[in-house]
Image (cartoon, rainbow, N blue to C red; front, side, top):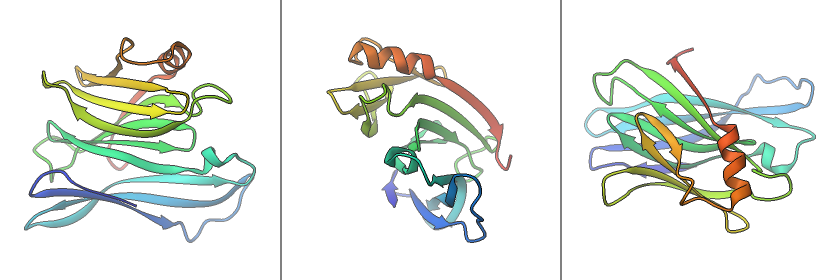
Length: 185
């Protein structure tokens, strides 16, 4: 589903597997696990993150989508940008394979999709680095929507001057949420 080489010794991949023992309940017709594997040269690979996505019987097509847009390595933590149904999220993942920090996950929910009902839908997102070294996440969408977040003080902050149109910026600012929890919980 997704594969990226982060440097000459480190790569990541995301694969999908259907949850075999899933039983239909309410409006949920199936579930899939999306597993991010970290590949380290001369060491091997290890699954370090799993996200379960539920497929809904009576939902629109956007609600039944899971896609990974991009992954970047920042300060010995992986940042994974993905869409899970109506949520546009970045998760920061640490692992003993990445450095000496304790294993944990931080989730930054940046926006809901569609951002405005009947309007903008995000179609792509990518991490980058500005000339001054600032780490960025740029998302593009329909209707010329461009959203730019900058990584400041261990959080993703919307750059309002570089984002637009105005109705999209207002919706994104209202939807920002952040969680942190140890791996395995």
